[in-house]
Amino acid sequence: GFVIVALEGRGTPYRNKAFQDYSYGHITSASAFEDRIEGIHQLASRYPYMDTSRVGIAADDGSPAPVHGLLEHPDFYKVGVSICYEDPRFGFATLYEQYQGLCTDNDGAEQPARAEDLAQALKDKLLLIHGMLDSFTPVTGTLRLLDALQEANKDFDMLLLPDEGHDIPSYALRRSWDYLVTHLQDIEPPYEFALSTGLDFLLDNMAKDPA
Image (cartoon, rainbow, N blue to C red; front, top):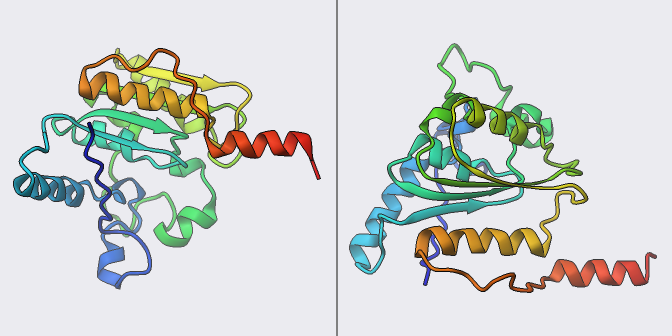
């Protein structure tokens, strides 16, 4: 019941300099939502069964795209699921500064607002999921965003996992799927569906043979 779209916007590395310079020094704009939104509209004109009034955005592994999508383009994105949201100010320098420079003004240019500064813009459904033991993507950014949304009196959903790190457990993945089904398709997902993934298999085998 979903059309899955993955678009690579401007700003990613290993392209020509003009392409990469689109977001250099402006990490929060690296998702290139203008490219993604235009791409979805073009696809919808080719495939009329695509409903652009019900567009969701989901990501894991520290991607800020779901959060910034809903906050920067609230009239387009209706549902967001963010697993391990990362604020670049608290991430690894080797991941951010190598391609994006320091998280400061770039040659005096105006920096796009941080997610916490845009909390008032939230209009629709947002689910934040984060493992409290995540050493790769610190939970600091998620908690700062949580505080800002609370201060802005915004409704949102959150799932904190006390004993989980950066890997996405089956429970979190199932909850994210349920969220998209509930709020984009307007139907009730299977109740407490027992989802198993490759991570379960890996952890089970590690427990049996730690070596």
